[in-house]
Image 1 (cartoon, rainbow over the protein chains, first blue to last red):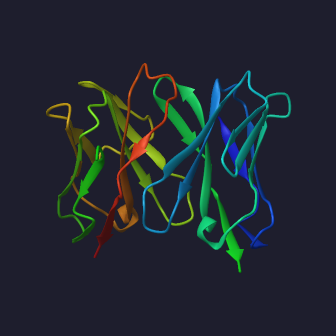
Image 2: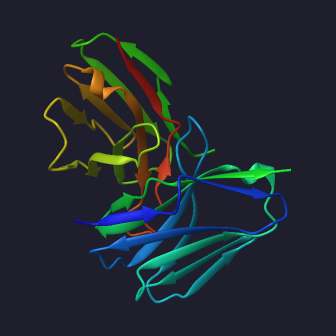
Length: 111
Length: 114
């Protein structure tokens, strides 16, 4: 079955540093991979999508890479701020209209 | 603003007492989803609709049913809630054919089973 792993239960970094989150998957070849942000008690919010033929995608302070050989995506937040503190979920498309989500990495940015 | 709305935000029910959760959308998306999310876990897809076509996940318990009477509304019925069904229930939508597969989530309904 498809399996998605996201690094560590929590990532604590200092404000201004770059946060790097990892998403590894097995047993699947997705056409694209998505990243979502989820705040406590709220639904996930879409951030970025990267397709299998794309190596890197940027949006403001966010950068996503996608290595289909390693079956890994890295999600970077540069110049991190306390407001970036949240859980970040990666998701793979596994069928038409269907995504499978990882458990997420909780990011805490300290002033 | 176009959005996905879930009611109620918090629902308390008793063990075995049927409960219905509601979702509506103003995005006019053709796909609607119901997910179950427990603490520190990934959202787990229960079922989804493409228009009126219903797609049930193989491991979704029979205790969970859904209705989509029209494009805008979708309901999750839990026929006999057990303690293990306490969770956040998330409704989401997407537009098949839009290319991105992006899903738009509602704020969720937190279900407590006493």
